[in-house]
Image (cartoon, rainbow, N blue to C red; front, side, top):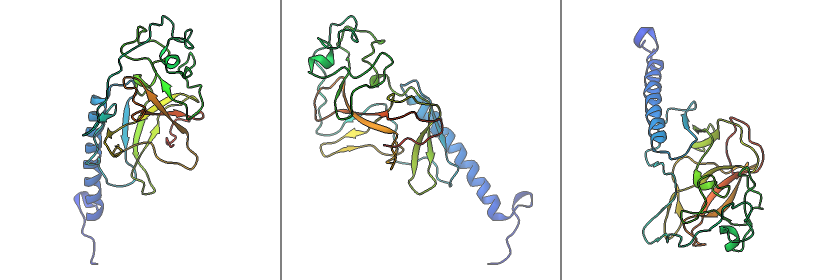
Length: 231
């Protein structure tokens, strides 16, 4: 083509146009970040970053803290709870996992201690125990600060941790609207990886229907700050 005409302050027009678009993108991403943090119900904060291209927030992304029942799905509330004073000490008896003939899933630090493939039954709203019960982990939500970031290899948006995560710790849930055909979660999420650092567990809390578990992701190894989350 012909010569590139200078833009503002003597910059080439293409460069000036890019800088304007980049500034608008940063403003849009900051607005999205504020929205995400205003709707979260968990301890961990969410950052947003795109140093790859000019894409702004995904238009069809809605942030939710837990899965929702879609058309044709009825999430039946749990009808019973445990009467434990100390759920960890009474784990083999009448606590929620024992009542379902399953193992108590966590140690005193809230780290999962059962093998992948076994279900996790947490205490629920009908249980006698309080919020500090060691069998209430997934229901407390994300504890770690995470970053939604634009990947550089065409995979769209991914998630990485901004702080160190200990092995076997709960990291996040895979959530979306549960439909009669499938669960559909849109937008940014932990990615699929060849060397995954997260493991999927089926979790039951306020709904005990085995067809509709909550999908929780736990660290399979220590995860460094800045590392992408994959499963």
